[in-house]
Length: 311
Image (cartoon, rainbow, N blue to C red; front, side, top):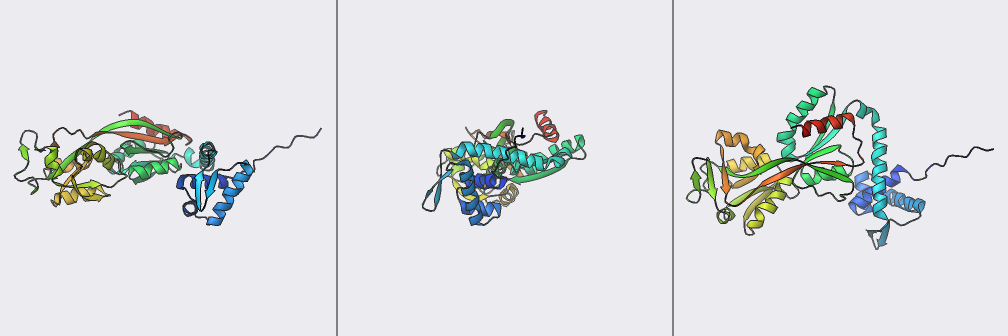
């Protein structure tokens, strides 16, 4: 009796990676740029995958690709397979204690360093890589399985919530602030000597120039949702990618700023900058932990989670 031959899958990881990239970017041209492949190679891989599956994944409308109803369930499975294969490929690195941590800008610059120091104390041989960008960019990296775990500000907004796990982590407060003795507050704001801050109404703040973070950052999300919605005619004079730049511009009295308490605590303590309290406005927010459900949760991953949740 002949031994039954084992059937090997004919679908390749390359075909799945191409499909996932097209699904995420919306076109073969952008997928080819992301994967560093020619557009013809990308198109060919997609055609081969559809042939293997015997089902369409996209509908061709002129030069556009529209997702077919078949695409989403295949996308979820492809993400899981790619994540598992990546885990297998880098298994020895994970065993040696490798972790790739993402963080939005405020957390990455001001909160993450002492957490990493604690991780190194627990695991001196840990191999840690970090990726620091705005919340939107960091969450995108988690979706593409490039990051093991991310710490972000504001509510994460992944493209596919079914494959992303998110957990509330900490609370933080944004603070409106100005240069001490700012020209913008002269003869306008009352100074509260007891609380060491200026006090403004929302109508007064709307008439002053504001420096804010760029769209896509967690800080900007809270400013839009909890501050600027009350000030439709506010004078936002500049959107800036770096919190440090905002601090320096406010120190130069170009306008007022709004950043996390962690970013300006040293300047507030020294008196270089001063808080501006706005009546009736709550700028508290939640920070989040975000990871891909298909990502391998290695021992070092669990150790880092333990540090984050033990505070």
